[in-house]
Length: 371
Image (cartoon, rainbow, N blue to C red; front, side, top):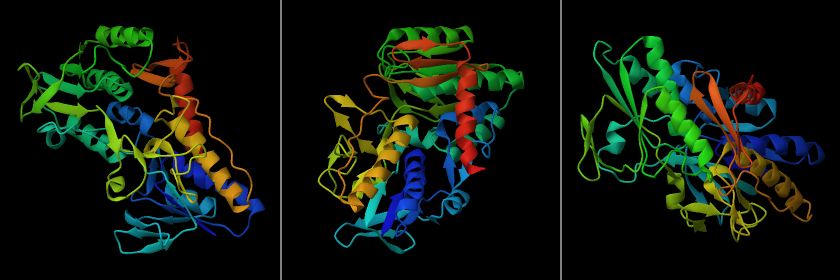
């Protein structure tokens, strides 16, 4: 029995890890992990690459080493198509990999909403490679003049990037102006209460970050950003953190989707399919009007249940229903703000004391599995 996992982010790694644990009671089970990258990326820590608080090696893990540890096969190739009738995964290198059960854990990609010039002229921290390229671009700036950095998108990643940029330029003793641009009326628009947004806005403003809310990017030119209404802002570097879209692999696959994401049933199977599961950012899970968030916590929890339901399917047992906890309606998160400070948002409440230390503890504990 061969189980193939496409995508080795938090969800995919959790599927493989749980399957390896359950395999002790089911010997005839092979696990194949496929990813075009060779390392898991701890995406929540990418903003700290900019300030130099972490190195790429510290916040990424060797997938080959991890796979060997759990007795799985790691295939470092890009998937280009899947034949669901033949139950075959096809890679860019023209390899065909058969499966009995398939798990999608392919995450999401940065979107630029079709804004002219945005993709070509912006940097990103959405991937480890992108974060490193952004750091290199900052290092090459001419610090003899006033630097202007525009961060587009004031969601969780955007506010974290802004905070780390302040630390970066403080260490460089450079003169820099950082703009945080958000389409919605306030920062952190996905959070249902305003108390955390108010606190974060004041914290960043007190550190000289200029916050531009209710501001939409219309076009990105070589030296200026044009906003709706004609206002322009000159820049040296743009860091784009506004929005994600479904993985491009999904565009070629005829599967049930909701708002572009793979629609899953209460057991995390792709809707209408008995042998195909989806977890993490790529999965659209909603139950009784409550939708699972696209975050690390949900990816990990979904990965564990998907693995258990695969084993239950093999044994003819009743499947377990998934219950989302970190939801769109009631999110929870750590929010790094720079200066070794953070806020923790949980159950509609905000906690500031020791939040950064707890965030770093969680990060280091998770990465231990790859050491």
